[in-house]
Image (cartoon, rainbow over all chains, first blue to last red; front, side):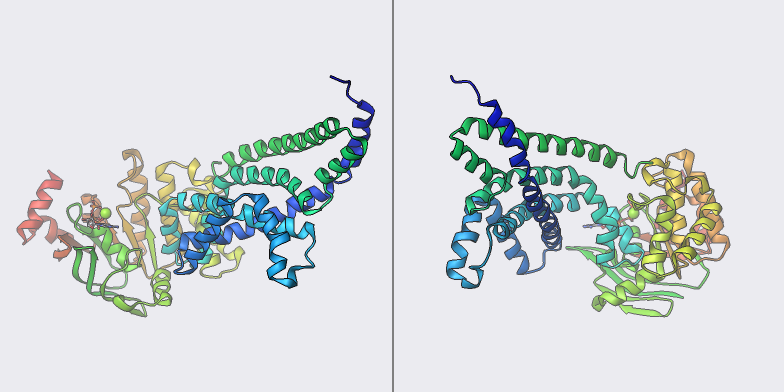
Length: 224
Length: 244
Ligand SMILES: Nc1ncnc2c1ncn2[C@@H]1O[C@H](COP(=O)(O)OP(=O)(O)OP(=O)(O)O)[C@@H](O)[C@H]1O
Ligand SMILES: [Mg+2]
């Protein structure tokens, strides 16, 4: 076994960190969009609107049932061939859309489970005082469901950050893409991928720390 | 003025309310008694459409609804003219005691927040819960939760307050304080329809007692008549059983 090229590794860190904002940007935008979409899908699944429910079920099943990489390729390389107006789509846009759709399906299921888990008495109390369905959902049910779903949703966010690395297969130079380039030009693959792995690892550990803090404060919520 | 005409509710093949006719004058306090599974809860829950009746006419105040063809707006109308006190309290778990009271005042009645909060504070003082204003339900005893539940209902100033066995889920030590609060509500001549197994309490505050069995009103009258001189043998048998 040869010695590691430490100078290369140390030099690589600032280069890769320069791409961190793009990674976080893709993950953050996709997270917000996936949360909103996931909430809407979950509310539909709870309300079971005829016909629409069928499509929502199909949507969730498809995006949970196929690999993210396949979905990304389908959006970026496949769709523009049949829908020419999508030709201008950039890799970053395609990645954000792909991550959003993929994770919204997972989030919809966790949010739905959390909504269904809210005690029936909470619905009845809201109905009895004359709240509309939307008021009841927004002010009573979702806040309680959010508390249950939050740890799982943070898990999806962590998963999403890691999944942004797939954007490099769409020609996006984000952290993974940059690593690939640097590794190829120096022909130091082991060093390069170890560095990028550690960077992802540290980000995820930092988020896990935040997650534990959120969980503690959520467990305390509503008990004072 | 509350009037139910031919109120009918079925769960599948099981007819739980079999054409209930009932009128309650403004300010009257009516207690419903009867064996388990007779439809007492269902009667209350049909008045505000927590359960949807199949047929009948429900009149609360100025609103008359044909139950079989009630629109969403009519259902909301009935709910906004009534208040409900649940056996299991059913406080909003994500709201403090004060917020439980202000919630509907702000979101449903569209009152200004300051007014709603002033009203909540007055009610909390009256129910002896001022210190618990900022506590969440999970941090309250059963008795305290039910007092908030009654306070939430009082705040609505509804035409009709419905109570479904408000003390049945309570540890015996908290029953007294909840009944005391209900007495105070009754003293204001709030129109009340109460399902309870507290016979002594019923005798004390009721203008009228209704005995239900098998989804029908078997007998009704002033408490003295029902408790001491019931005409129907089923009423007498039930009272013998519960008063021992
Ligand atoms: N959601 C429901 N689905 C099916 N049947 C129901 C439902 N709710 C009530 N029932 C049935 O309706 C009948 C009346 O129930 P209800 O709860 O109104 O009785 P109750 O007089 O309040 O009894 P209790 O004194 O035990 O509270 C019972 O036979 C019950 O099993
Ligand atoms: Mg009952």
